Image 1 (spheres, rainbow, N blue to C red):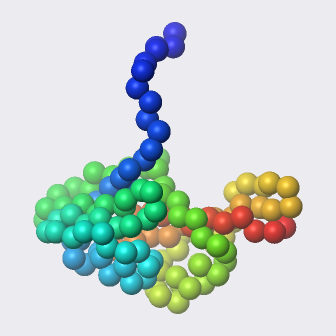
Image 2 (cartoon, rainbow, N blue to C red):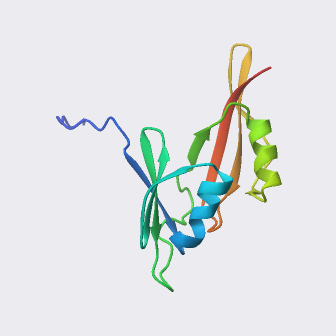
Length: 132
């Protein structure tokens, strides 16, 4: 039976990613992925990603990573051309899980994506529509 609610979640404001050391992680996100740092304090960094803020949350030494589970959601970034973006990130030493692959079709275009890891092993994806 469906439950009626007046609550409506409509805007995703933050995505929090757990990292071992925010100071060591920032160069990857800023210098390699090209994100602007909105704010930075000990153990917490906010990165500009459009309408949603990507926040890096530092962990205490020895603390177990809370997000490394099977079936974990993957954060996907849109790019103009997934093949070119992958090639550029590879030149910068980014570790990719897979080659570009078709994930959807729409008329004369296909959606292609490829997954990569940050310096803490968090999995991300880049995606673009390309002509067939």
